[in-house]
Image 1: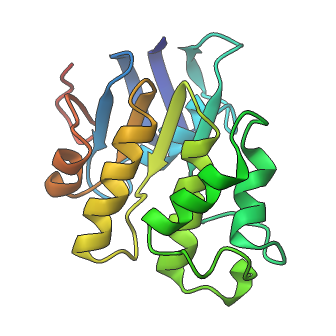
Image 2: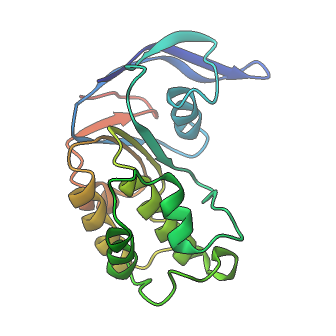
Amino acid sequence: MLSIRGICKSFEGRPVLENISFDFPEAAVTALRGPSGCGKTTLVNIILGLLAPDEGEVLLPASARTAAVFQEDRLIEHFSAARNVRLTAPASVPDEQIRAALSELGLADEGEKRVSEFSGGMRRRVAVIRAALFQPQLLLLDEPFKGLDEEMRARTASFLRRNCAQATTILVTHDETEAALMGATAELDLGGKEES
């Protein structure tokens, strides 16, 4: 479903990505790893079409339903948690499913509150639910468990695995435990070695 070929990107003459090629396994989780500053978020933005590579190409069907959890939560501040999710969820997703998802991730009593009142971890969970209930074919997760404690990371990973089992998923993480929680079966290491 998704392949990248010869991706190169520099900023102010400094190479960040150099000739990166990879075939992402379909309906599976690939962990995108590497030290800070190695270009993980840059690659995510190139795959999403938010940033153009200097060289190379992203091979992805134009019809692919794509969702992302960015490092910033990108919620609509004056909307409630439920309304933020409803905004992008297909009509086939009933309101009951949205409420159930919020409840599963510990937000049962918070669904109608404005997200501007939420803590960072609460906002993170809303962003995850919004991406998952969009029912994507391609899901990009840029450090999706930021701000979550160990128990909530496990619950959130379980929610994602169950709701996005058919999605081709890219997980940006520094943490091997998070990759294991998400059931990653492939790895692209931008710090050097690349494996499929």
